[in-house]
Image: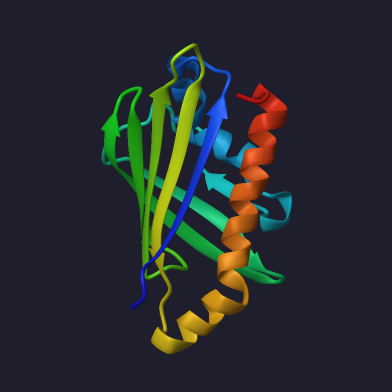
Length: 154
C-alpha cells in the first residue's frame, strides 16, 4: 500500500479563536466541499466537536456512484488542531490533521495534512495517478478559494 501525502497551508485574516470556531464545526464542511460532490452530512447537528465523535457523510465520488463515508475525530487540542480519520469509506487509509497557528502581527496559518492510501494495490496506484490525486488537489484548491472569498486573504 502506497501512502500519499497532501499538504496545504493558508494564511487567513482571522484570530485563532475565530478560525477554530469555524473549522471545528462539522456543519461547515458542506460550504467547503465542491458542489459536484453532492456532500451531505448525516445528521447536521454535530457541534461541538469532541474526541471520539463519529461523523457520517454521503458523497458522490463519480457520476451515479455514491459512497458512505464515516470519520472519527481522534484528537482534539482546543484551538490548536484536530484529526479526523476514516472508519468507513473510499480510502484504505485517511488521516487528516487540521492545524491552526497564530501569526505574528495577526491572522492564523491553517495547515491541512492528509495521509491517505487507496485500496486495491496496484489498481489503486493507477487510479491515484489517473484521477484521485487530481481530484483531491481540486477539492483542496476549492476549499482555499472558498476560504479566501469568505474571510479574505491572509
